[in-house]
Image (tube, rainbow, N blue to C red; front, side, top):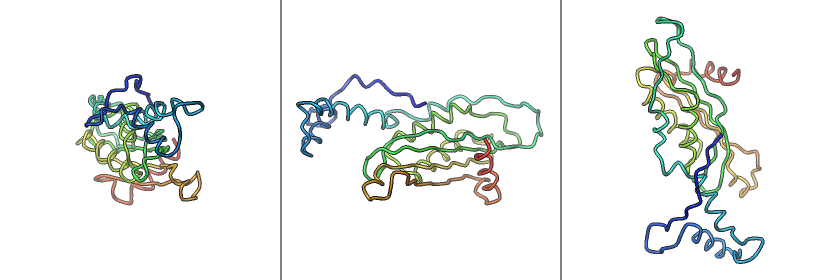
Length: 209
C-alpha cells in the first residue's frame, strides 16, 4: 500500500507568478478549452493538483529515510551458505519522464547477503524506499538503476550485490495506439550479481515467492 500524503494545503508556487498549484492546473485545463467554473469540471484543477502531488511525493523527501536502520540477522549461525533475500511485486506508481502522464507497475528486488553479512533490511523498508523513488518522474531503466544502486550503497559489505527488475505500464502508450497492457521492463544488477550465472537463479526466486 502506498501512503498518500496530506494535500489539503495549497501553498503558492515558487517564482513570480504567485499562483497556487491548483490555479496553475486550472489554467492548464482552461488553456485546453476545459472550463473549470461550472459542473462537471468545476474543481477539476484542484483535483488534478492533488493527484499530481500524490504521484510525485518522492520529490519532496529523501528515500534514504526508509533505510536508516539495519537489522541483525544470523538465524543459522556464521558460515551458513548465503541465499537470496527477495521482495517481489512491489506496487509502484508515478509519472513517466516522456509525457508526465501516470504509470503503474511493479518492482522486484533481491540481494545476496555476503558470507559475513549479519545485517539486512526489512521488506517494508525496501518497499517504501522503492515506492519513494517511483513517486518521481521516471522510467523503467532509471527506476531500476536508482533502487539497485541505493540499496547496494546502504547494504555495503553486508551484501554481495543487488538485483532489481522494474516493469512499468505508462498510460502515454495510449497516445501512440500501442495498447493499455504495454509494459516497459528493465533489469539492473550490481557487483557479484552482474554475472549471468546469477540471473536465472534470481528470476526463479522472484517467480516462486
